[in-house]
Image 1 (cartoon, rainbow, N blue to C red):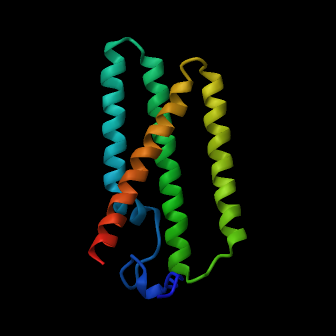
Image 2 (cartoon, rainbow, N blue to C red; image 1 turned 135 degrees about the vertical axis):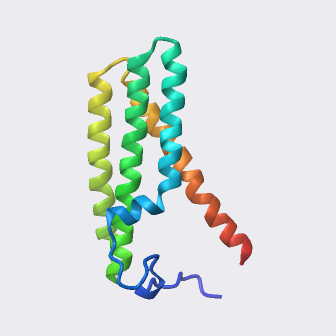
Image 3 (cartoon, helix red, strand yellow; image 1 turned 30 degrees about the vertical axis):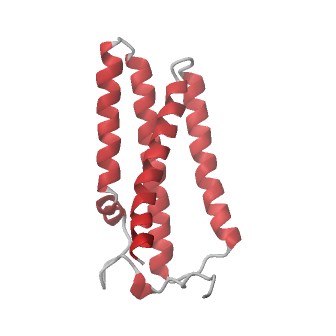
Length: 148
């Protein structure tokens, strides 16, 4: 058995023939993740609003939104890369990831510092969303592996 993964082909693309990689396509594909993000934000404000911690709730919600934006940006980049047929090198992939995470980190840490001490909630919201998104991404993959 070969240890190499099959090379993605344009015909293996998640798009229908003639359809282009777009933000709308990514948003449709990631609607469950977006629904979970909205549910987390509603729960966040519901719980923290009753405690009178509106600023903390807003920071956690901002972290969730920032995590969702990062997730959508990553998915859009991946979809465009797959559909283009271009095989990016490790350096190209690392550079794209580094730039995206650098921007995310600067915005997150800057906002957390600006709203300190409640701003730490932004980092908490980002971490919570990342964990939920990881589970939502991993479960379908595990189901697929189990079927094979």
